[in-house]
Each structure stands twice: as C-alpha cells, then as structure tokens.
Image 1 (cartoon, rainbow, N blue to C red):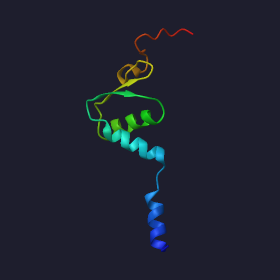
Image 2: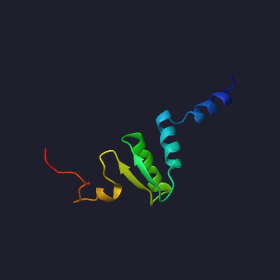
Image 3: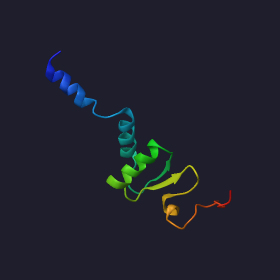
Image 4: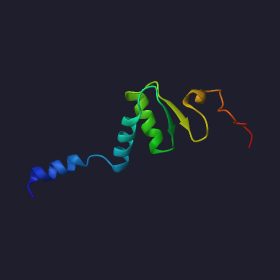
Length: 83
C-alpha cells in the first residue's frame, strides 16, 4: 500500500461515527422548522443547526419544553418544580 493511500485513508476517517451522525442530522434541520429533539447527539445536532444555518428552528424537547421556554427564570409547561 502506498504512503499516499494510507494518509488519505487517515484523513477520510478524521471524524467519529457520532460526529458524522451529528453533522448529517444537523443538515436535515431547516430554518423555521419545528423539530423534536432527543438528548445527547440529537441535541448537539440541533445546536449545530441553530448556530450554522437554522437560527429560527424551534426544538421541542423530550421533557415537553421548547427552546423558547428554556429561558432563565421560566418553566416548561406542566413543570411543577416540586420533588
């Protein structure tokens, strides 16, 4: 195997499968869309989309809140705050 082939293969794998999933998911989110956002990698994908190309996308989170209700001092609908 030639050295150039080894180097190009290493460059081609310069990202993890999780990173690839985040980028692929972020690219599917369009500006202004309302999207359901899961935790961990899906949440990162939503943030990437918001910061790069979809600033007006609205995320609905697993706990029932939206990114608009996540402001400091506010609570998601149905959140009692007890317990």
